[in-house]
Length: 227
Image (tube, rainbow, N blue to C red):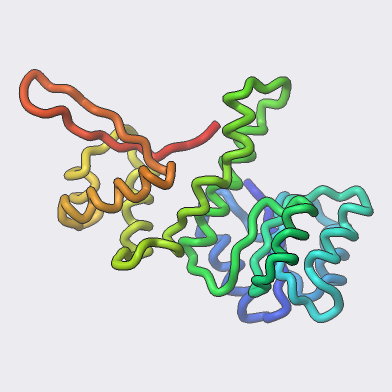
């Protein structure tokens, strides 16, 4: 189980973000904090895997808190979730080791793709030891596919529909055809095919061909789990 501290100065937003985290399998909300001081005190008392961190806090910025944590030798993973959009803040977050940066407002689907990618990253790192180039590429690219999230879908696409397609694939015991995905999602085959291709281009779905005795090969889709 991955323990998460949610930090946001707005109590309502903190509870919404915590509710989002609770909906993702494998994640648990360890606590919430509304100031940098509260977050620091919590992290000094509890072991936490990940901090979802707002930048605009009443006593100091989120990035100032990250600097303080690093100075104390604490290397808890951080995903920024903030309305701060200026490039200098984004760049500072990257330099301080934030694993991702999610701009408010965002949807549950947008956050979940980042959490899924974080879980993938932890799995890729779990074995330890030496890494071949292929594994290094997987580790460094763990968040790459999260850049094309349902929150950033092309015009005319629905985040809820993309979510349904993804859940069907993630829960499947084996590869599925577009028709099988459509049936399980309650969609037309054409709609399911469109979302499958979108997720395939984002690197979240793998497509393989199944050849029968006659006719054209069938496209079969599986959810891509790096590492």
